[in-house]
Image 1 (cartoon, one colour):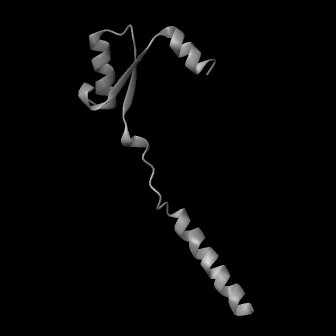
Image 2 (tube, one colour; image 1 turned 90 degrees about the horizontal axis):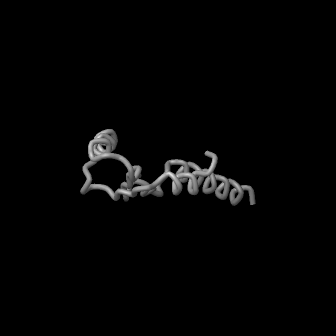
Image 3 (cartoon, rainbow, N blue to C red; image 1 turned 135 degrees about the horizontal axis):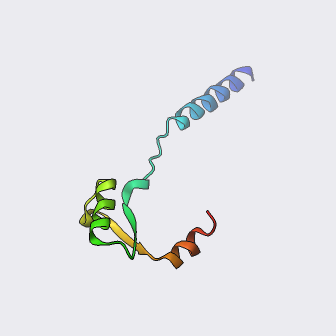
Length: 76
């Protein structure tokens, strides 16, 4: 019985160690989205894209106005 408990303990410890390595991948960067204000000029828009190091055809661009910003962010 003691051998069985040791084996179970070793297996559980092994599972814990391997799960902490992060073998499951996160695909948070699989889609790049840049949010830009609807009233920004073309120059301001390009400045934002340059800041993030992306080109307009590489990302999904979402434009928001002030009302939408307040609705989505609230009092953040």
